[in-house]
Amino acid sequence: MSSPSPIPPPNDRRSSRSSSSAAPYAGDGILVGGPPGSPSPLALRASNSPSSRRRHSRIVKTPPEFQSLDYVSAPDSNLVCLICHTPFDKPVQLSCEHYFCRECLDHAWAPQASGRKTCPTCRNKVETDKDIRPVPKIIETMLDELVVKCPNTKAGCTWTEHRVNVNDHVMLYCEYTPVECSGTDCRLQISQKDFHKGCLHYTVSCDDCHASLMKKDLEEHKRNICANRKTSCALCSVEVLRLDLKSHINKDCPKHVISCQGTIVGCKFTAERAEVVLHEVNCAMATMAPHFREQQARIERNEARMEPLARKVGILEDGLTNITNMLYPANSNDQSFPVTDPLDPNDTDPQAPTPDFRLPPASFPPVPPGNEGAPTQPPFDSQVHHLLTLHDSLREEVSRIANALTDLDGRTNMMIINESQRAKDEMLHANAAISSLRMHLQWLVSATIHQRTTSAGSSPAKTAGSTNVSAGGSSATRATSARPGPSATLQGPFRRLSDSTRQDTKL
Image 1: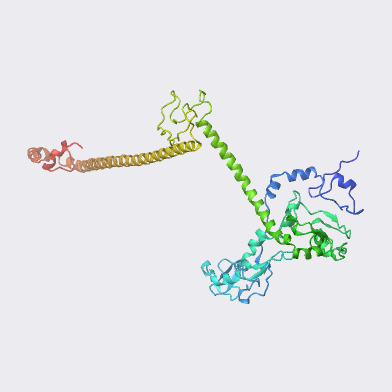
Image 2: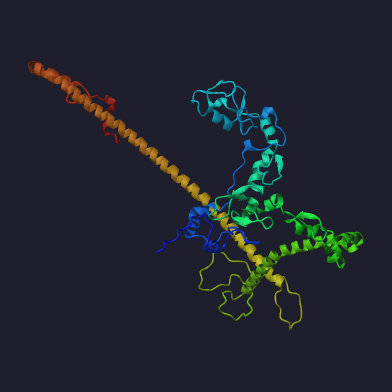
């Protein structure tokens, strides 16, 4: 039993058809390798993965590096970084007044300790980040005005402009910016101008010299490298590139038969290009042809603009017709229509609830007198006037409701403020009462503590002088009875005579 064939990797562009029939160049027009055929199962799985769809959802570009730019003229030596020897990129100034690129300075300080950074030129110590200051504005202006070439000059771009515009040119406008190939299973890069052509990273054969090369390099090969890239025009025998042969015949070949430019007006002269050029000098129709051509282009642009406007007008007319039919039905006996009287907008179903507001009746201008037998119908302008009247009424009602809501909002806010003030006053009274209760409780606790302390100190004295108590009992009794205030048994802070009535005061 034969072993099954292995699954080709995702980047393998061979297929069952190309592997069986495709071969190296065997004749004119045969591709070597051929374009991508049917993908393998693994390639399909990889192309349908979320990461692959996310990768091809946008064109990824790399911003240009200022250190690799090619300048038209040699820049001033005062604008050159002493580390990378190229004009400054995001320059900074140290306390010793030396200028460096920020990235170059960080790279030079990478092996140094955090507290031992020094200037790469004079070795002065840089203590804090405050010693790193921005450069003067004039330095940045001089750097922005340096004239540079496009980073894609080798690919064919001829752009030359100030350095401040190079990033926008590369990221937005340059057609030769390398981007990731649009092929689902290709990781190579391609020029932005060829992104819409699909994947061009497969091998083809040159039709002229039969050399094998990549599809993306075929045009460059035919234009500059191919040994058989030139040919002779069959009409004028001029040697031109094979790629430019059709363009030469259609635009430049003097032997090619063409028509006069006045054909658009009515001139029927046809001859070789050299004779037509001489004819157009004296042809009045050829002189008028550019103006007619410009008018024709303008008419086409106006027609393209009028087409969507015509559709909008048609939609608006249909809507106006529907509104008119609802307000003025053709069959007045139709009981299913909600508005029985088209001239009274407030005439609704009697079972429906009463609306909050009523629309004013329609006001029509007086109908001019006519034949008595002819039916009098309101003109179209009257219907439009009725619609405008309804619109104004609705707008006034909306304004009234908005004012009412504003008034209600103000009243609600004032009521909330009053209720909040009343609640604050009640809370203040409650806090005052709680403070008074706290003071009374503190007085009672202090009296109790004083009583316990006094009773504990007087108990030894009573035991030692028990005999003297009986002898002087009458005098002690008289002294106690003669002393105002609380009894001798309550050893606490005594009240004054004027405070005796406060016992009955309600807290």
